Amino acid sequence: MKKNKIFIACDSKNPNKIKEIIKQTQNQKFVIGYKFGLEFLNSRNGRNFIKKLKNKIIFGDYKFCDIPNTCVSAMKSIKDLNFNYVTIHISSGLDALKAVKKVSGRTKLIGVTILTSLNNKALKEIGYSNKVKKIVIEQAKLANKAKLDAIVCSPMEVDIVKKVFKKEIITPGIRLKMRKDDQKRTLTPKQAYQNGSDWLVIGRPITKGNIKNNLKNLINHLK
Ligand code: C5P
Image (cartoon, rainbow, N blue to C red; front, side, top):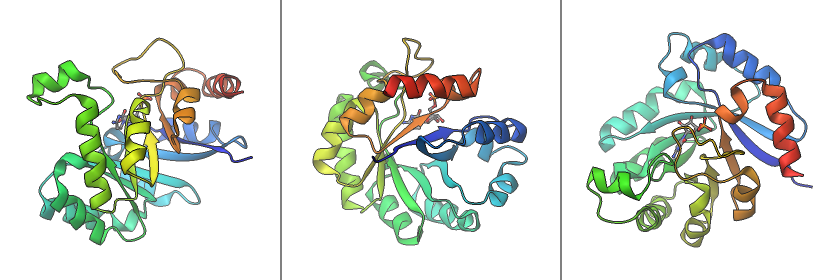
């Protein structure tokens, strides 16, 4: 049977905590990748730590959101880290997406749609007049046009994204319990896989508290 795939969000600035997360999540049941976000990537030891990691699937969650020239330069400046996946906000626009795709080489370029921490009310506050789903569909079309390798979206939007984007779908906003923290558009791991997610991104529900127990709970939930 095909193994479920999970990116563990390594959100800490402490390399010892990251080492602990990696050690405790070595696992035969899942394909595990490690996602490094703004906290670790901007920390004092983050870059060197990642450079020394061997034989892991690694994901640089930079969420580039800038003009094409700056996004391209940023992509080039992390080439030596050999990430398997790197993110760019689709709201950077089609020109930026295409330009970065041209220089991303073997690194898979992931387009990030509307953040899972936002809902329709939050979008209205920002000044968007369309609802989440409408914007996410348009963003998936842009990702397709720019030939991106993957999309990040909420597990709630996998079905609509799949209609226009045929490559990998990666979903954060995963919760086993009612507790959502700062996330708004969440589903359970089981629902996310059922909807067709290729990869789940899970942070706090695994890395907070007892990591081994959290993983066991996840395995039981998926049975
Ligand atoms: O702790 P939690 O499971 O909420 O972590 C989710 C991770 O996924 C965080 O590292 C966050 O930065 C990232 N992410 C997200 N929503 C997106 C894109 C990335 O939560 N749309």
